[in-house]
Image (cartoon, rainbow, N blue to C red; front, side):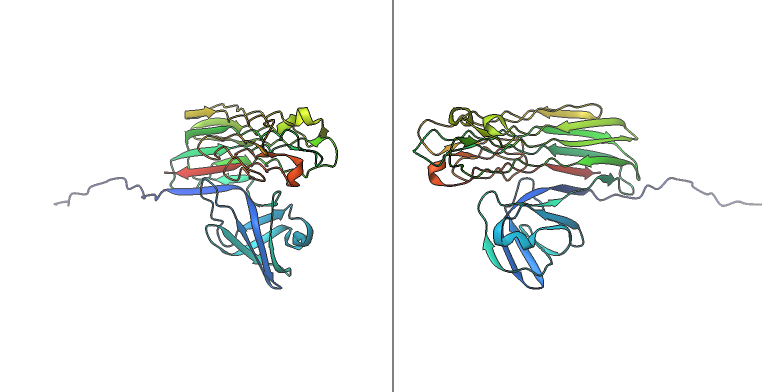
Length: 308
């Protein structure tokens, strides 16, 4: 009896690289027709397109724009710098800092089928600038601190999960009638989990608000103090990059601004009145009160998961 030869082998399904991004972006324009709201936001680094069908929250929009705020909206259309959702608000409104922001975040990231490795990049939220009083010209407020940046690689298998928390940015401040107002601290972005490559616990620190942070009223002199840089903590993973942000600059004796600090590979240093650190983790600019402008908000926290 003759038997035909049989070859046995192993076939591994190919996997197209996948990248998911979560974060917070600052809104510049709201418009609505009574059925659909469309918000325009500043294009950050890294790029941030929110997929149709995603759940977002919109918070911090002030005044007549408040109708656009929503804790849970489903995205019906999107582009690189816009997002639309069902909403009864009408009319258009351009926003100055602090503008409010869109959040597209998750608490659990699940590894997709056939992925074997992931590179995670993460930024904390940037601190906001301080603002001095609206009286006679004085020194400008200091710039907010830039957030920390962490990148790591770890082996994964389908179904592994990471717990994710996206850092919030410090919000810009209104010029007070007397004294001055400190900027607010940004918060850390954290990623943790036990996956096939081991246990990882990572934190990209938030930048400090100028003038001591916390948003309280302070003296003019203390409001010129720069926000501190965000610092990180890392455990696990391979090829780990652990880089602190940059501190903001001290408010100048003459001039209208303190520079917000940079966040590595994300938000560049910001300068100018009401300039937001919109890209990942950048610090907001400080300002002086006589201009009657807000100080700049920090850039929101971000995290990207790039699977291969």
